[in-house]
Structures are given as C-alpha cells and as structure tokens.
Image (cartoon, rainbow over all chains, first blue to last red; front, side):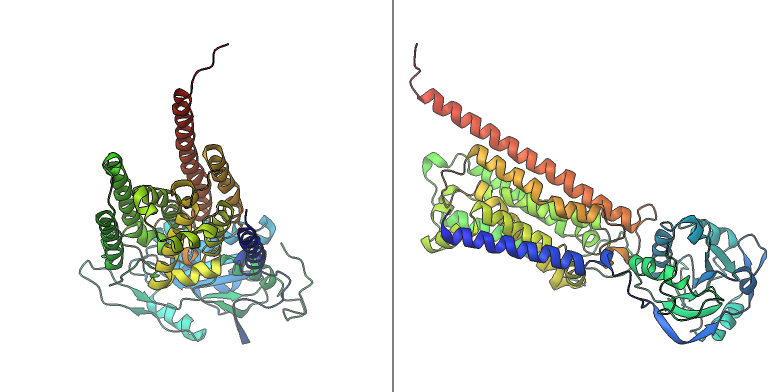
Length: 227
Length: 275
C-alpha cells in the first residue's frame, strides 16, 4: 500500500470514528440527557387548573373528568378517529412509551381522548380506534358545543368542520397538542404535533413529580423517583 | 408535483404520482451507456459477452428505477424506514455491481490516464470500504437523514450519495482498472466479508434502539396500525443485516466459482506432472 493510500485510509478511518462517536452519541434522539431538568413540551408560565366537565365515555356512562382523573398525570387530547395524520401518530407514539413504563408508573397516568367529531365518532368506533393503541385509553364524546366550551375554558382554538368532499369525507380542525395535567391538577405543559417518543420518555417521569404535596417546580423536585 | 420523492407529511394514498426527475435520471443513465458503447470499439473476439453486459446494465437501471420511483421511492422517502432500507440495499449493494459489470472492459481501458490515476487511491479496497461505509453512516445519522429527506433535493442527494458509495465499494471487485494483481479471488471474498462486519454498527444502531431514531418515519402518517414506528425501524435493521448478507454471499459465491473455474482453466493449460 502506498503512503498516499495509507494516509487516505487512516484519515477516513479516523473521520469515521470521530463522526460515529460524536454524532451517534450526541445527535441521536435515543441518547437524550435524562438528567436535564427542563421539559421538552411547551411549558406554561401560568399553569391552568384542570377543568371540571362531564362527557360520556365509550360505555355511554358519564365521565366526570376532574374527579376521575384526580391525583393522576392526565394527558388530554382533542381529536377524531378519521384523522389521517396527527391524531393516530400522537396516540401511537404516546402508547409506545407508556407501554415501556412499569405497571406502577403506568397506573399513575391517564390518557383521555375527546372526540372533535361526534357525528362520525360513535362510542364503538372510538373504543375500537383507541384499542388499536392502548385499551386503557379513555374515550369521551359530547356535542361539538360541549367540547368547544371545554376548549374555550382551556383557551384553545375551537373545532372547525371542513366541507365534505365528493365521498362525504371531511376533515376536522382541532387543537393538535396533547395537554399534560400534572397530578396536582394543573395544566403545566402542552405537547404539539412533532413530539417524539424520546420526548415523552423523558418528560413523563418528570411530570409525575408534580404531586399535590410536593414542593412545585421541575428543578426543585428533580431528585424524585423515576420509573 | 414533485420531481423527486421526498417526505411530504401527508397521509399515504395508493394513487400513482409522477416523479419526472427519476425518469430523467434513468434516461440519462441509459443515454450515457448507449453513447459509451458507440464510442467504444469492441474487438471481434470480445463482442460475445456484450449482450450479457448490456443485460446487466439494463437490470441495474430497471432496479434503480423501481426503487426511486413511486411507490417504493415515495414510501421510502417519507413513510417507512423498512422501505428506505430496501432502497439502500438495492442502490448500494445490488445496482452498482451490475452497472460496473455492464461496462465493457474496453471502455475501462479507454479511460484517460489521469482518471485512472485519480481512481487509484479512491478505489483502493481499504479506502473504498471505509469511504463507502462512511457515506452510508453519514446518510443514516438521524439529524442528517431527517433534514435531507424533507426536501426533494436532499432526498436526491441521499440517493446519489448511496449510488456513489455503492460504485466505490464495488469498483475494486468488479471494475478491471486500475489493475491490482494481488486483489483476486479469495482476497475479494475477504473484502466482501469485511463489509459484513462494517455494516454491523448501523444494524445494531437501528435494530436495538429503544425508540425510533428518525423523526421522518416516527411522525409520518401511519400506513397501517399493524406496523409501529419502532417495529418498522427494527424491520429496517433486520433487512439491512439479512438482505445485505444475502447479496454479499451471492456475490462471494460468484467470485468463488469464477476463481475456481479460472484455476481449473489454468490447470488444464499446464503440463501434468507424472510421478
């Protein structure tokens, strides 16, 4: 091997090694620094109290949101089962991460899906759709006016139904973020579309630390238990 | 209309879409080949294998078209990591040896000395192996892949980089220039074996990741709920391992057969010693 080729080989090998170690360790989403106290979601400067509303669950029974989710990390999402992109991706990514948590931690989290399209989303359809992600996800249904009232209370955009196409299908405009109510009953962070599984894996244990009796503040409680 | 397949972020539809950039690319490959054949005089004795070489080139271009155009190209660019891996395997491991074999030996011999001199260090087996794997690695770094796949130009750059990596990797094995008498049968098989080892880090990186590596595929509208983003990525890693291994084993088998038949031919030509 000539010296020029040897030099080139050594250079490429060294470059490969540097890039492999540097990029794989720092740029890959799987290697986030879990000790970083900041949440990846959009943190609210002034947390909003959890709203008290009642809608029907997929069994047709009234579900008192405030009471039934008390003391739990509650992830609330407004969407619809015919959604072609945002809703199924959000639900799938959340389900994938929840599935990795210990049973004890998982039981401290509720995922509540409120349909923004009650016309097409029957209780059965909602149940079937949610079961594809996680059978423990709670599905709620109410009139568009009821849901818009909840959205207004949370200072979120209203539901907008698009014009039906030739096949009768239509899209529904709805808030695309998942709302995270910490166990102390406050909406502290929102997770827009684009939130990755690594983001959830990082944030869920931190969100669980906001218990009613804990001294609040992410950094102050960073020494708590993590699943 | 898009000219090259890129991640759209739209729900997938089984409705055909035209990608004229792919057609132009394929047409340019064919035109360049035809032009090269016309300009390369083939000695009468060596014209017999021209049909096989043209068939190999045709197969390579057909494979290239298949993986770059709709639906494979579109699925790989924006929806499924596993399909993206199929593209990778075909573009890097299957197409280049056929392309290189498709070029007649006379055409290689007609390369200007300057080009051969420039190719000598680049196509040295050690350099080619490292450089092609470096390209493969860089194009699989999530930050790079996610950014490039989001645009048509970026997606085109990935495909061209893969083709270049594949040509670089296969050149020492298939192309007759520059001549390296020491790089024959078994050494070439060893070279392919080294590639099996070189691809292992990427395989591990994809297959054993706890969460999806690429935002493009994780956040893409799902084509089916049966395949989660993580399972899709694991499938990509396994495809890389198994598919890559099979292609390299096939190539090693051909090299072995050619090597033994060459030795037999040489043996027949030698006088047989009698004890």
